[in-house]
Image (cartoon, rainbow over all chains, first blue to last red; front, side, top):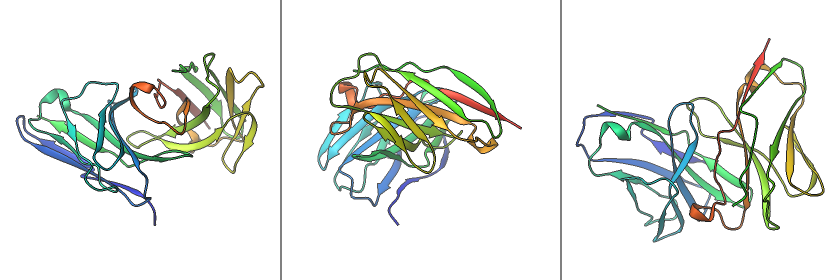
Length: 110
Length: 115
């Protein structure tokens, strides 16, 4: 079944750790996105990709990085996590009829 | 960038029809109007999309006047499970992303449905 997956769903880690949030989609979409959202607040676009080997920064500055080596995979990496990175991270992919979102990863950095 | 304006919150009761209006005065010729629903701790879910006049699916209806400067999402006979945040987005669906501002989520409208 065509879908978009994110792992882990929840992550609690200590300051300074390197982490990678995984996002995969089976819909064959070229366009993929990462959003950051704090509870009760707006979604902010932090990265997007129009296809393999294409990555761009979004409207909200982020210390994270992304890669797009395969169409279906769009991981997000934080080299050194800090408490200010605590948030929910949502991955999405898009076709002409809007974006499809994954379930999100709730990250807590202690 | 077509900025959108929606009410911050709305209250309703089960069984009522709910209409949420979104203003987008600077909408461009190539822009479509898309509505999303988001439950707490989940990603937004696509509800409906339109360009002009009226669009209806099994979940909602979308009304767009001729000048396209606003749109209204209509939810028939809401239930408690419709309590969520509803986002109106305006953009060129052929060119999503980034500073081109094609898919910027605002604060949305928090709909509370009461029994």
